[in-house]
Length: 123
Image (spheres, rainbow, N blue to C red):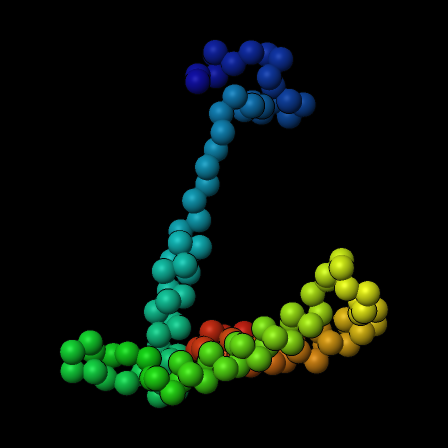
């Protein structure tokens, strides 16, 4: 749109055009490159921790022992979290203080779990 085509009523106090008819989509190249680098970084973290095995047919694969360990840890955390889920039918609901104490104690376990996966995570 040329400036001569702009309605006078669309000018704001500073003389700038109030562009209300178009929708702008801004793409941040940094976010796109970060999204592409996350899997690469995760893979490097797994490799640096010695959690990848080399298979003749498949190439690099995640260690079976590591997968079993991750599964057990995930299952353990999930079971603990399920104890504190809200169920309207149960009469033994936890108080807010109990819930806060539980979340405070399980938070380091969840952070450690993510770090064990090669996903950098801090408190």
